Image (cartoon, rainbow, N blue to C red; front, side, top):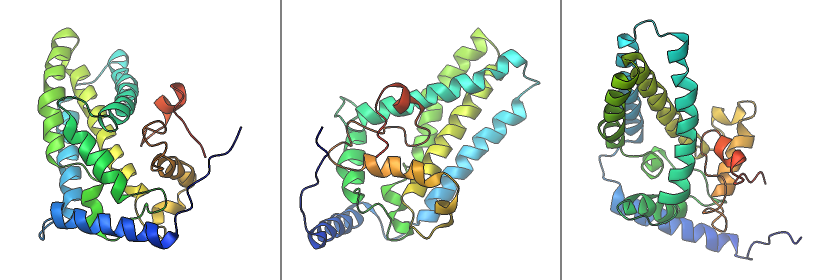
Length: 230
């Protein structure tokens, strides 16, 4: 079996192309008053605020109700895999904005050989819009929560929201960490480099629509045969 061979493109040409893409993206999509740390802080404050409110409302969950946590975690992992594999890498009717933002923008801004941000302004090319948290709440968590409250209990609904929101925040933080500079302290966490490499491999344009769709924990990738450990 023959190994994959990368096209011989001069490093200078690659650097020039990526920097040109980044300059165009910043000019078109990043306003002068955008602050990357503010974007991250708002996402965390909103998400953690929702989690804290739900924890406050919890009322002595039973052992059976606690099963909501692992079930929601696994559901979230497979949902992440499916959303990334399909809506983010294939044009889906009604979800074209996800394909455009991810495949046409994020994957051109960050390539396998150019994964690091240049400065915190580049957070805009990694983090999802803050409004996504509110959209998840209105479109998914509230209706599903109401249904689960009716079917099981309020505790089950609250545990689903807590776990789902915690998973979303971990997705944002882990994804951002993969694009931080090599001298950042996260790169010194034991085992971190192995997971980061999975995401770097995903940014190889030849396989990005076929491998390593779990940005967080590669459970679905492993089970569904899309895990590439190069």
